[in-house]
Length: 612
Image 1 (cartoon, rainbow, N blue to C red):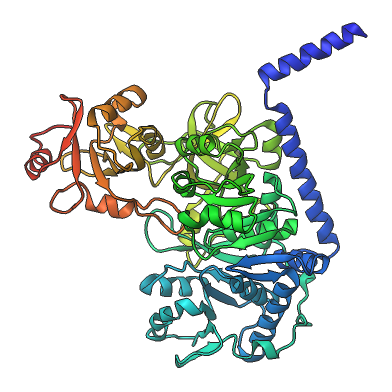
Image 2: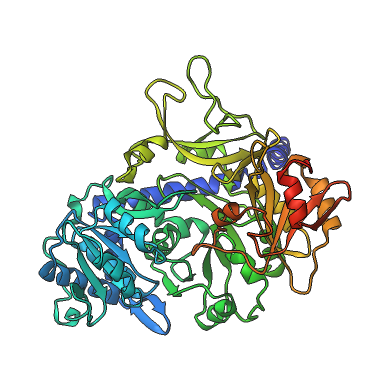
């Protein structure tokens, strides 16, 4: 017996030494399997879709607060009945019918969810529009998803002027979520809402829904061009609802959502996650760093969602000591910000993740290790199959052998993330854009006839099976024959004590192939630029080809509504002092310092008299 005990201890020691995250992987895999079984079990009882699950929760916990917004409390039953009224109103007053597409252009408010669910109960597909969409892009979005109706929030009604002035071949229906409107040709959705029945439509038969059919259109901007309408299947919608549960949230949590609901993170993962748990959502119209912790204390928030740079804003805000936040879930958290956040808010657990709008691939870092976006263990690949491919550094296309097959990277090597397209992981493509849909697909990857989705993201799997996001192909640039990963450079610069924020990109210079590195930076309060210290940091941590040759000092960085850095405008403006009004600096390698960039120096650089 003692011999067996000694052997068991030895095995456990070896496991901790060689596979320290083995049991973490097993526990996460079991949670995934349990979630999958629960979904399949519900489907057998007719609870198939995202909205079906909401209706089920409304019956189970009718009086539980579902959404709290600016002091207004909407219960699960209240949201169910209001969405029924929306469906009843639209059935009697609109020309919409099952299978039609209706576009939704609204700021964060409870009626976004009620109108969304009402349209679904009518049998419509819903297209989420970015509330910042204007003019040409708005009309493009309407045409690409084939919308038969556009529903606009009362605070965005002025955007309808663009649509009213455009020729409408099919006479699109226009609705405003208000009790009245003075605009000709626009209907007021709330005008008679209270007078219609709260009962569900008798023709709503959720059992007839094909789980692989289209549920939503969510627009993705990509790196260039007009937005693309990604088709979201009912299957993806249902699977997304498990996100908060997988992160460790429960039905007793109060989840703070400040992200825009037109974004998948807020709508499918956030609202959907609350529905799956039967939890309460605290919905904010727009993120406010100064109000964040005050709201957390006021509404007893226990979980919040983040994306991109949101956590960096929170680090600089005074914390309300009596808040109850225990968990932050999201994606896009830079390691340097992550470290600062953990140092500042020790009791809050971070659940960093990775996911795509178009397909069902996703990762979750459930270990707490700073940096990775998830795990790639044996168990995880059973449930979320993927591969990392070698790629051509010039074209970023996957490398193929003489036989035409792609090549997997080794551990520790960066590769393009791809995922198999299957019934469990469908790719429905982009509405109205067949060519772009086809470009995202890779055929005959490992054997004849197989089909994979090309994410366009560069990942690295280390020897402990952690996955790290390296860069997005559209953001990576090439200089001196080498690829420069903007995220890697940003992380190194972000750890310098006098820098508050960094955005790295590449700019063209006449006479040079590729793009030279440039960084837009924001200095911390009461701090000055120390060029020599910055040079020393680069010299210690980065190869010379990835150093930024130019700096642009700004008071703040421009962000998207989802807290992603905007690069295109910076790239277009370049480094010319007559174009850029912000202070510019140039890397003087002989002085090992960044010096002010003058017009004379600029002319010498573009003429080739100063060589980089």
